[in-house]
Amino acid sequence: MNNLPEILTVKQVAELMGWHPNTVYLRCTSGELPSFKSGNSRRIRKEAYLDWIKKMENSIERG
Image (cartoon, rainbow, N blue to C red):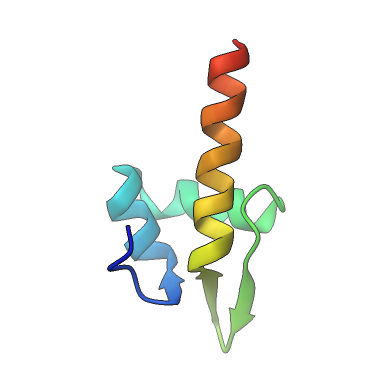
């Protein structure tokens, strides 16, 4: 994960998660995955992505 760029695209996150890009886009626009608009595209900071992953892991562990 340290090799990730500082700013990720929806497509990059989708590939990392094994999800369709629309799924990632929906998570971004709902506010679940913090992101920002850059022109017509959504971008995700690496740190926001890693924090989001930790939150998902914690919620799974709590079951």
